[in-house]
Every structure is written in structure tokens, then in C-alpha cells.
Image (cartoon, rainbow, N blue to C red; front, side, top):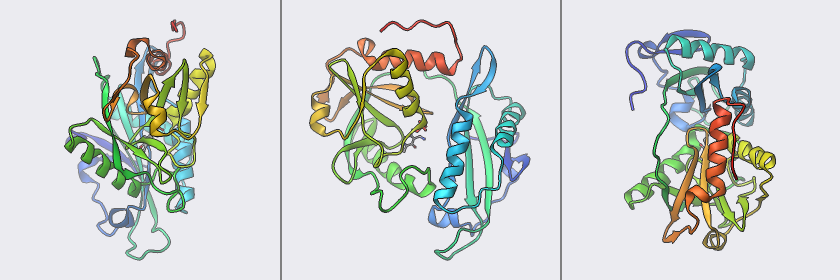
Length: 296
Ligand code: PMP
């Protein structure tokens, strides 16, 4: 993946500048200690023009993540959304992934965060076609204990665990890692939330020990709209064994079916699963297709 070239512009502290010319402070607290926050958004080329899906929710979460780490948030989110649309135009992007990052200035001490900076970058993100079901493995890496971090904040340093777990899963021949929480309940994968189907109902891990994704919340809303019963509760590996299908969701992932977890293969054909219905609904939602039909 090429994230930028010599023509790519990024938003940096209120200005649009070439990505190659930014220069980064080598004494940044974020670079050394992972003390920074970020977001991941998607823009879609809809029939109403380029639209950033749930932009307000993502920038609000960026602000909340800063608050959790006591990083000053001196930006106006409405203005940031306008600037992000401008950034997409400058880079001629219609289907894109957008990455705002708040990073801290120089401070080598383990003390109050250094002066914050905000950069926003975006790059081309095309629809993945003909996607296959994922093969997951349960990971030996655990999701963080909520007494050590703020689980609801999207903090750069938290992703060390995600990278370790994901790399480990790939080395073992799987697509992704499914992490348990510190109480041995199912939590989520390294970068997406988990849903399980059983007896015509959906189950998803309750909040507390997971990162509560915006897509997870969207899926919960879709269930309400479609009259699908959804239960948020602590899930065990035994629940997974009794499940009939499963899927992951996230802004980048969207909705993707899970074929197996370790040696457990799900019996329901993906196309007949609730997940497949939700995937179609979600696609129509992000593309702002109003008169769509979903057959359950
Ligand atoms: N969990 C983690 C660890 C993530 O990084 C993400 C992606 N931001 C998600 C879940 C899904 O969150 P969202 O739906 O808000 O993208």
C-alpha cells in the first residue's frame, strides 16, 4: 500500500501541506511512548457525491480519546469535517480511508503531554470484491485490562498488542487473531468487533473490555431496524462452539464473514446468515441508497 507520493497533501495544524515536507519532531512524546490518539474514517463515492460515513461520531470520538489522555483538544469538529472534505478534493479522492492523528510535542518525561498537533491524511481505499471468509485463531495475547488503559479511547500505544496478535496469527497460518479479555471472555480481533449468530439471534461482547466500535453501534441499529434480536453479553469459547455463524465489523473492515475459529467451522452457509443480510444493509447505508431492499 502506498500511502502518499510527492503530490499528496495532508492537513497539518490548520494548513494543507505536502506529506513529504512535514518533518516530524523526533522528540515527540507520541513517537517515544505511544501517547497519542487517532481515528479511522471512510469516504464513499455515493450517488449523492463523496460522503464521509459517520464523520461527526469519529471526530467526537477523537475528542473523547484526547480527553481520556488529558490532551488539549483545541479544534472545532465541524471545521475539521469541512477541512477533511477539502483534503479529499485536494488529493482527488472519492473512495478513501481517512486518518486523523493527534500527536504530542517534545517531552521525554513520563508527565503531562507535550503541545498537541493534529494531522489528517487520506488515501485511496477501493471496495474489496469477492471477499472470502476469514480464518481466525484465538490469540495468546489478551485485550488490555481496563484498569491499565482507557478501553474506549483510540490510543496509538494500544495498537502494539494488536500488531503482535495479528502478526502471530498470520505466522500460524490464519487471517486474524481473536483476542480474549483478561477474564477469558471473547473480546474482539486486533482491529474489529465480533458478532456471533445462534438460533436466529445475534450476540456480541458487552462493552467494558472491548473497543466499542462505531460500526458495532451501527450494526446494533441495523438489528433494531430489521427486528433482529441482539444480545450484548460476555461470550465464552463454548458459546462460539455452539454458534452457527460469525462476522467482524469495523470502519475499514466493514462487515466480513468468519469461516472458522481455530478448528471450529460454522455450519450456516454465509449467504444464509444474519451477517450476510447485515452486510448488504450496511453497504446500502454507506452508499446512501435509500430505496433498497433487504431480504431476511
Ligand atoms: N477494535 C479496534 C481495536 C479497532 O481499531 C477498530 C477500528 N477502529 C474497531 C474495533 C472498530 O471500530 P470502528 O467501527 O469504530 O471502526
